[in-house]
Image (tube, one colour):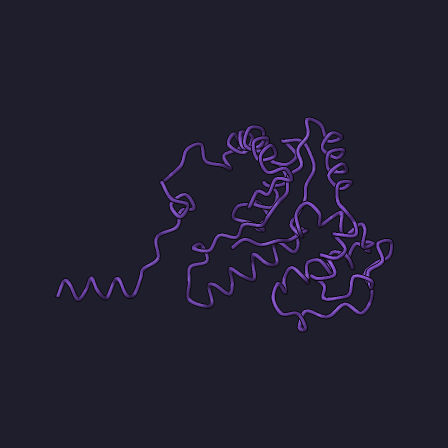
Length: 216
């Protein structure tokens, strides 16, 4: 389950709710892995990481981003003032068709932190609602470990701000830290994604039926 939460509290609430509903439906909660997205912006020092994060924000084209935000919130672009908070006439979740959770995440983030539209666009620019974290490799590893230890994630969907370079930096600098802490594999357990997640192949009623008919 790929998901997006901005805070540990929201992440834990989602995790507990989904696992509980899975259990109540008669399924093993461990067969569902919850992987929040995280956008790591990595620097040799915290100051360097924050500077890179700020530089990425400066590359955002506000008017283009405002149109995209307006489409997500189902309002007219002219109703969004870049230097004001979200207007009061935002629809509620019940009025939204599709992407309800992303809509709610964005509105809650803006309301909770009293962000202007410009600030909100900056927060959403890199991760489209996923959590962006700027820091050293050690700090990024700490952030990942903190969410995992506190019951907000089974793993993470790594979404580097710069796809090629950012992924290489994460692999080369963050993964070894996680491995030393015993939080990440040092070799693959299998040949498929399912096997490496430690998940059994689900039974197929049609296949099982044909096998039984063949045995008969």
